[in-house]
Length: 137
Image (cartoon, rainbow, N blue to C red; front, side, top):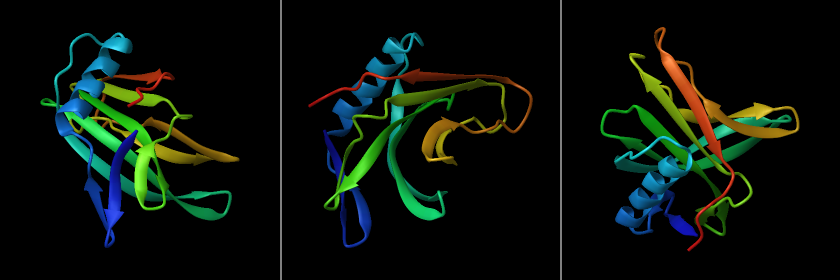
């Protein structure tokens, strides 16, 4: 599924925003989180070091209005197009009473990389939910 592209060095969301928000809401249902109304969408790029090589990590991030549920669909860059990384699954970080909410991020592990949830800024309730199935166009 095509999500966006890089034009003149700028990341552009090209997929239908409402359709993507619906996909994130369906993802929350699939993860057993109940009805979650996602509001924000952002494609983000971050460089990470994997086995002594710097690799760009891309993700389509969404959060609900209260930043309780923060989710990501991993993306891969192919010829300046950002598409869903069909082999990676999805992740939602849920946090309550945490000050700064925990969010998904990709970190380096021996031999590769892994999506996980960040730490919270205070003692709180935090859960991580991973889904392997993905939505196709």
